[in-house]
Length: 130
Image 1 (cartoon, helix red, strand yellow):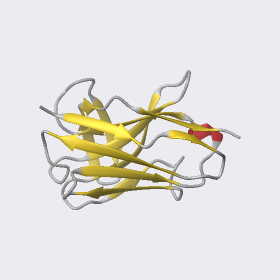
Image 2 (image 1 turned 60 degrees about the horizontal axis):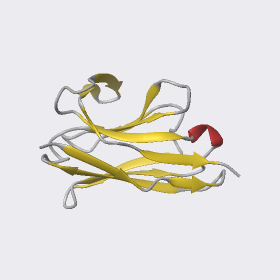
Image 3 (image 1 turned 90 degrees about the horizontal axis):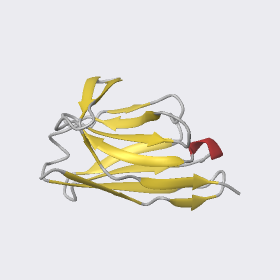
């Protein structure tokens, strides 16, 4: 059974940092592309960053490029999102998703190709506020 569990969210001041974790089970993160998405209050869900299964290539949306870093630990079957220089507009529920399955399918055009994400975690809240 495919499962994704996020953790690491919390309250942080502007300019601060957080690291989110996404622990995967039921599949290997080195076989399926993983992405981070977020949904801010009153807004649509949006993509944040993605890491390719094949070679670990990474892709970022303009809003976070240079501030966020996605990485993975295949031994731990975990994908991380290091978030630095956080801004109030980064406040959102953050979700990780995998390119496996077809539940709530979202197709994203990344720098390494078009990826359909079909398995989702429950999310972790990130609040950036002074």
